Length: 299
Image (cartoon, rainbow, N blue to C red; front, side, top):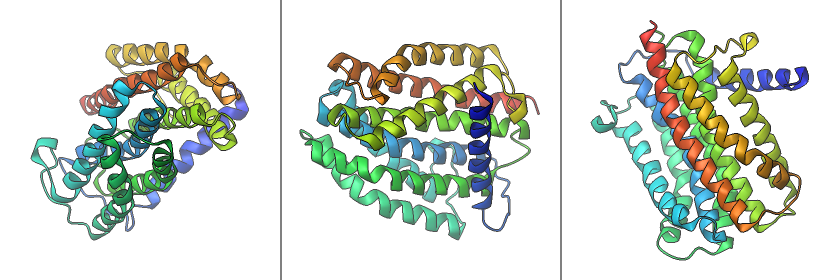
């Protein structure tokens, strides 16, 4: 990694964390034994905000439709399930108490409003053939939905982060790992956009940016980055899991790089990208849980 890009990466991460801390409002930290579960599920909303339009697009474009259709339905259901749990509690998700903070409740309400038109389209598209124009409407709504989801996550993180349950030096590592989940689905969405419109310059630029960030973040997680306070993997399971993700990422990166450069992909290559981005998402979901457990064990 070049020094210039390392500094850009550091700045981006620092701004992201600063934004999250600032949005906590009055600075009050609520010590809640289920706080880490609230934060983890809230973090998934940003990923789902990208995964749902990516699946709709893939179904419309005929890309890995045996995966895309079920993913669209399940991800849409999960979005509502997580929102309901964060608002009302859900013992099965280890979120015991209903939310009582009025600012968090307002953020949940705002996110529900942003979700409503996407939900209507997702429900219709899950049960019928998807027209590309309808899928692109969902793609267009993704940035605003993701922004609202990330604001809610920042608010919940600021209110429920418990220093007694998470080592400070691991907070940035978990932040990066969580964002890898979002990036994987953002990449899947952008690649699908380009399958339908290879001349889409904005999608190409965003894809190139996401490829660089995913690669830099994965390298930081695998090798550590002391200048940012990022340690090497704390145990063999996480180290091996990151190596497995790297194997999949190494396989698909040349294909993505060609796509970002304006070279259209074959049908098989489009399916490979969508499949691999969902595969690394599943692996990273497991690692986020393992990182959290490893941090608690070291307390």
